[in-house]
Image (tube, rainbow, N blue to C red):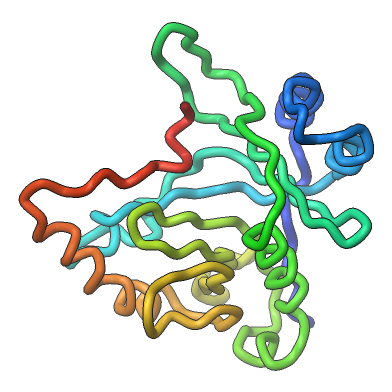
Length: 209
């Protein structure tokens, strides 16, 4: 059996949210909009916070689904639309999916490059030869984002995490880590955050606002 990394088929409500929201983003010209609208697959986005990597933290079991990232490459330009699916409060509450942003840049390029690298040496040799669902895992406060490879056949293997963005010393990009291995590298930073009596503000990029 070959290593098969698979993104997820976009659900109708996510595609509708993308189509409804794109006209509001002037940064996305017509060709960019069409490239995103033509996409059939995307990455479910999960958020794992500082408490989840502390001793006795929940780890990946504490990761919460926050939305979708639809990432495409067009004429050498990497772009993505982020769809939030968690309920939003405030003056305009809603529980419907909505397009939060359209972005380009190095991190989207790195995401797509890392996804492509999953089936190529040397990264492919670090992973079992079986099918995986691939999600995006963002970790606010831990300065690391990764692809989360979840086995399609429960019990056949463990999950793997492949960072595509990090500012943490000792964490390597495009390298496959087990949950335990990556958490061990991130835990010192989480403990440092916890030690602050008044914690500096950390932007929650998937807060649904």
